[in-house]
Length: 165
Image (cartoon, rainbow, N blue to C red):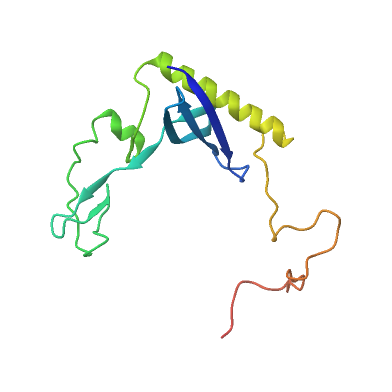
């Protein structure tokens, strides 16, 4: 198996743990999307694509996120019994299950290495070390002084948060 292409899609917010999404192509014939680059306590790591686990309402059979107290469809109270997955390793995933994942540690290290290398290259291209490239926004203040016409500067400094109707 060889990863033949890695595409990185950086996230704009620099203060969030999710730094980027990646798409990997394996052997020019298989694509895995929504691989995440996350800033953890010990540095960057790669998380595989996942989906939220859901349970059916006993009354209407609508699939609600696990650990919900009420059904989002009919509003009835959901049983709060011990869930079958609470005692398994899936409980660490806080209600998410991987869609695709490597079986061996060597494969995980290979994927993580390729994705993190591509992420570092993308960061170097952006010109901001350790930060995702930032796109301009109409709500940002201009760099060369002045304020856009759509931003009002009149702020009442005595405003305490009370609104009068």
